[in-house]
Image 1 (cartoon, one colour):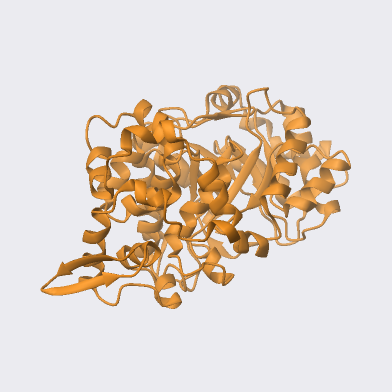
Image 2: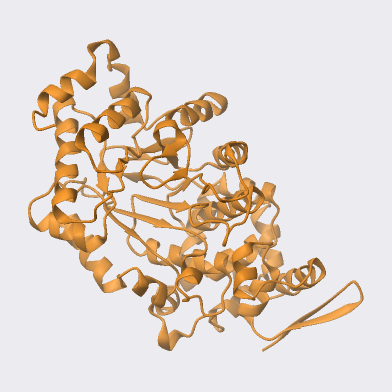
Length: 452
């Protein structure tokens, strides 16, 4: 089926749904690189007009990636909740936008319909929305998850403490962790990106953070962001795994390039849950995503990068994760060229994920060769805070010395909390009330770790 619209006196025709979605997408360098972007602002406007007239039900009958060859598509179709979709089944994409912005779309209502919304529906409606629309709707949705802390509650903003080190030096990681804790960071997770993806390193770092946690009775959860198979081997060797991590994408082929599939993630989730380190109703998975990952793996099937990103959220949703975040500017200017594109993408990702029922955070970040700077990140940070983001990153000095990119600092989280009247997770806040920095926690902790 083709789709058509007239803009500025010119008739435009789009051969299929994935073409229409791509042409309707706000400008971004990745879609231009892939050769699927609109050729002009006029064509983009025509595509958006045509997209607004597409019935939401059409997304249930026309797949953007074939069902027969893609397990993510099969997951989306086979897990769709028809009963939750029923109140929306008569709407077009344009109608859906109008309804989302109406008083009828309250937080509880949006939570109830989430299982009936497919990623493509979420991506489609986001393409018709202004930034204020993306913020308005997302701010109504709370997705709460629990481990040792409770993340996503109203009036709260959590942080991932990211104490990366270029040589995985335990002393350096410990110092950065304690620095972050002293500045009220870490209530979402203490998450370390290891420089070396091997079992020995993962096990060492997990034990390091877990011993710190137990010694000072800190209500935090930890994660070492190695490949899922490396973490699973560390788990089998008795390492204290709290959250199981994996980067995911929106097509089977892209996930294959990451070395994962749904079966492997099923196994990882089950193994982590069987450790019973989380509460019985707790959440144990942590996923990261980012626009452009499918294109960079040549696994996008001609689908625009934002729709591919939303499809990754279907994978995440399967596992009731504790945390999900888009590493929005990390993949580089080939996919999101400048601050303007990064800001728009971050708000789209947050909106789509929350609409699909995910506990969404954001790594507000950029690479040093992008046309962006820290002022752009301040803008996105402030907008996401107003949109109700679950958590952001806390990186020493906002400069990741291992991954070599720019993110947000411990002080940035303090700024946002102070500006918007937000607080850390309640369990962590209670611990902070008794925290005594004059005791020199670093000295004490170092004494507890003679090998450092």
